[in-house]
Length: 517
Image (cartoon, rainbow, N blue to C red):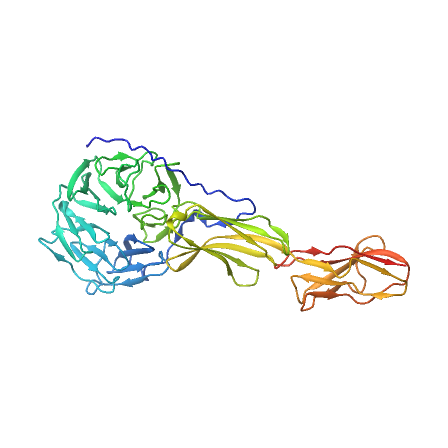
């Protein structure tokens, strides 16, 4: 085996999601969610690939290839003509237009997002054995397979040519970095790297290579691996496309899927039959996660985002927006306020991907409405949002993320209960015995149709006013009692009260003093 050097973790800061003070909202469990099924029917998904900015492709049985440009929310399925009985076992898309699928020794390519497919041209011999994996990046890519075969394309899959391969085993996995550097692995543990225009044997391991991944934005020599591979129970990385070393803190277990995310902290997704998690060279190197799929047969990521996908053994696909971390937290500065008071809404968003973050609000019984929107980018991970609001009624808030024109709720349940203001028309009545008067005032916000209860401490303790316990609020938000008489000289107080409802909290007015002489 080639001599191995140890990669030194890059001095990158770990971004921590700090919950703001106040009442936090609940985030979605595990920060993974299931995508929609790529197609109807029992046909199994065999492979997935992700492409920028917000796309994912799936291929499998019954000749089905399906594309989504909104992160797996909606799909368009295609069956290449004449291949309805085919099982596609490998898929790669460089964009929403250009892609390739493989079945046995057959390659099919599309330049229009899967609407039409054709066999590519081979400059020289075509594959003599099975194609086991494919990878595309920009205009170039590779197809690899049995007998050490490697085929390359430089025109988005339209034509392919066999390349000199140093492999002796079957090449089962291939990945391409954004600068064209490629990595492949074989059933006999050979690690192949293409750099400088040719493939070379970088290492021979004691276990078969099961998966590989490559950085979409490689920075060679910075201490962070840009090429990754899994072999046996180990994951190895290379920062120079020459030497490989075991990643520190990565669990020793079988890995069937690798995907390089890059965000945050040069993260990579490691997924296998027993566990899944994210590894990064800075901060806490390993972060376990639960995809909800009970295992993985493949992993994919568009690269330079915190978005990743896992394909489960039953063909289901799960997605995370946040590298398995908490996608968002939402809190308010006060859970109970009086109408007209300001509250501060604080959100911390752990997503690095292109889209829009929106904070919405809803009064119970009404529809959600946007409160504020923010354009989101890969550099926005960990950004804190502060929004000053003056709610007039009890309001619930949520955070949503628009990814590829589809909205996903990240967190909800941040509620501020707002109590109305009850303002008496007068705070003091000074009357002569025998006069009449009305106890009146206003409610803010106006609560037309609701009832204001009237209380008095006449007699020494607070109790409802006799024969006029409550009055209805007018369409303008005002309330007025019946006429009160003043049969004797005395002094007492009056107060107005509104009961708590789903739309507002309870409220008392200031005490009004009545003096009768």
